[in-house]
View 1: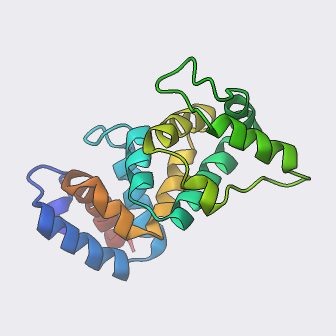
View 2: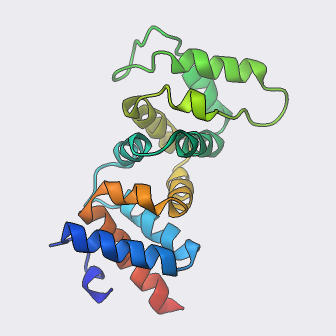
Length: 182
């Protein structure tokens, strides 16, 4: 673990994945969550929205729905309203959200009290690029969404491994620091 305390420099992909597997299984979930969160925040990794889109693409539909519901819950109703109002024209930003505007509009219309929930079937209709845009908006609305994603993906370390050796090394370094403090 000491080799990871200095960051991602020189991380060996296969060994880092094996080390991450072992530590993620043995360490307390909070420690894993802190490590993943720090990898999501690091300036040595791609931006948070890009990594969320990447993990979305590597997740199964249940994980995709869970992750989207975490993003929406963290960002609050303003994100839902902003995205639902975008409709299917795809105009404006980036690649556009296409059908998600209509899907979220239906969710908003069908919500009777409480937070609407995206189903695995709905989540699987989205592209990683669309989720990247949602993550970007969610982070703008509530920077604490990064911690929520770190906590969510601490429960799914197999998906985190898809981020690559640099992100895993950063996560392992922070996990090592968390374990040392115990």
